[in-house]
Length: 490
Image (cartoon, rainbow, N blue to C red; front, side):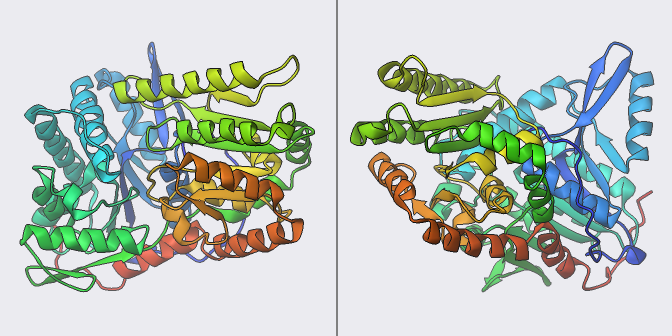
């Protein structure tokens, strides 16, 4: 989930997942957990947004890890500033990878988010040219070089997400004995969809350079193994890929959140007071999403309009508060979905609004963590209805925040989180009639049933928090010592 966070951290003491006596943990992702903004002769350092950055920040802190990633600047800064940036980030155990404006256009917007993102979500990709792919390859090589400069014997490398699919193989070629993990935070599509990509086999081989590949669900494991089989480059047996004589394990380990942090925030007096103010006098539906065409926001809105048609008693009472967090605003597909969402909101409000009430309260903005948890506490019904989603941490954040064991979660059956949160109301997010029926079921659910369903989900989220997730992935990587010594690192 992409939103702004305030620096509130859990005070729990947890055992370290990675034994630092055996070497460091190197986290590698497209973005660092901080964002740099150039302001004249100064660079301001702020916190990055997003579920990946937030979740891995907890892991970095607990493991004393070094993080390698892009700074967020669209041009390499002038040498004096770059030296200052490198020094300040190094003090935070972060290693910057600098991208040019062309890199951002071709690698980030072009191939990563114009081709891979939609394809992984089984959406037709945007047209692209060979320059986008070549830039993707060159930027991945730059990330691999940054890893190799830092890599020492005993270190564990943990690469994240679709932007860096070639990095594991590139590092493996230079350091055959390195311990390398890769985690994909998106879905992995049906093999037929994946094979439409001309570079599919090269990307698969890049990933198989890792020792362990993690995804969110068993379904994604099956799709990935089938995609490997289709390349005929590697033998597979169950969930193990044989890269020459080296086994590569593919496993499902759904990412999670710092449950205790959300529960503590939900108990704060200010949060409870704000939740009470937001709730008002009628049923409150809440949606909080990055504004992306995969999130199912237009369908959710239209289903709410259908609900008002079917139950006129809700007119003047029930509201849908939709937070749409700005995302990739320069990309045409995102501009189109924003226009569709805002037009849908306009039509619903134009039809149903009265002097002192509007059915949809739409806000195109980011929210900080205090406001976020207050929204979770206020919601009678939480709507998490993506068309396709690798996991969806919003669903888990909502559950963790409901320390009152109340509220109803309506969850897309096409979100990875549906495999864990089975007592949510699971829906087909493309069926607006079924969505409206689920809204009715949520409003009519008895308090005892709401509590039973929420308790089941809270037990799951509490037992499988972000620390246990990291333990499960890193434990396999730390199991064996590297079989060769790196000779080209720092």
